Length: 213
Image (tube, rainbow, N blue to C red; front, side):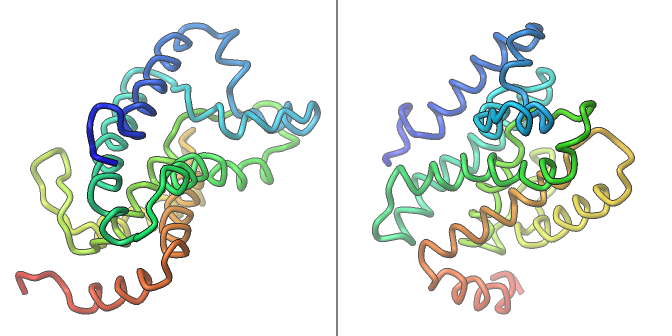
């Protein structure tokens, strides 16, 4: 990919924004796509594992997910995948992102397929997958919290996993923390499996520490 306006990331962001915006206040339309385990189990509507990633609860939910996807996804396409995977393809990138959306919903399906009150939506699982793919490539590269606070990706990633696991155990809100956790693990593992040398390289770079030490 050359990182132009027609990158897979930009097209995905555009389609997701369009669908999310059109259905944000359309309850009927949203109900057709949302991840609802009971409906999936009773009517075999397995497509909901994927379509739920194209709808969001509100503009803030959509904006955060799509900004992070746009930032990390284009980096993956322009630099990381072509540099570290000799046989980079669009299919591999789509497996990373869309696979993250699907896989991240599996724990919730297992947990809630008999709970009619449970539903979920959003691309967070896929976005987490893309972010953790970037961490695998460059663990000590800084990401910027709120655009200002520099945090090494590996540190932010570890904190994110712990926070997601802890909040899931507390079950104190309506956020799909386990979906975030599962998507992150998927992104890290599936990217490494595309080229097993990446795992060795990650361990070496992680142990070396940041270049400024």
